[in-house]
Image 1 (cartoon, rainbow, N blue to C red):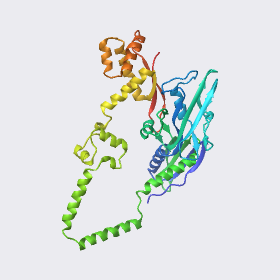
Image 2: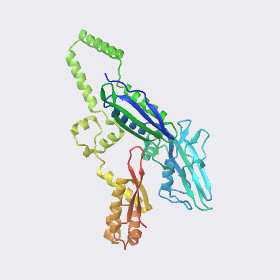
Image 3: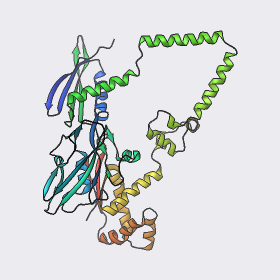
Length: 412
């Protein structure tokens, strides 16, 4: 029989950080338990964060504000880091109105009494002049894990005039674990598991650890059937079989016909009705597969064939290039920033020619306003420069999927 580990010993490490030491884990179970706890802690706990903001005088995230040191992209990055506790799960709005020379911090926001800003000293922006003015309205929502802004937009739960943010609801900042061998009786291959949990201050590490453990227990309960349930199911099956034997008028034919009918119905079932992730359903739909029958007819297909379609990939990259050309600076993942940088460099090199052919070539990929800025402004601006029109700078690691983020900007 596989023995159970001992309850964890909890040792505080620093503010909002604790070490959990779990002894007597069965051989190999230290890694199993540590990995499961880490994934749940980072992805499945609930918290509150800003999901949308309206800044007076700002139409898009690539703007700048007069007499404010940070541009809007930096302000949005700062807003993502503000942490809250609130009594309800409902969305709550807060406002900020600041004038004059001032360092704006999270505690300058005004919220209802049931909302507490846990990171009051977090920098939001720096006003550098007596005439400076900063007004904004934020929406604080309650959620789980990480939610990209595209999901908020799809749900339509934010106003069109607001800038929508990627939202990091998770209250857990960092989780590390390590496993070492220990002696239990005559065996020396049992595991001792160390899990270090750091939170943002909205909950304690102990609370986070217990919540994650409870989530795992609830998930595994689905796979557990006690003896009473099994016996009841066995009785039901026997009763059905006996009834079929007593009333068997061509039973084989009936069963065969019903099985065929069920198979026909199942083959026409829409994939969206199955318990598949929305990402899988969308990718299959992009390839014209919408039913079980269509998937079976496709046969065995390698995973690479179900990647992002080329047209969508090109549209995404073209959008990044257009944003960079028009606004001079954007943030995206490091991998996409590198690809977009290469295309911007290539486009500016084409624009420097200033010919009608160059303009037509650019027009096949970009909007008219983008082509105009490339040919009429950026081409002449970089006329004497031989390449190196952009720079890519790493900024942070995105929580939720750990993607490295970067800023791509035009060199002035």
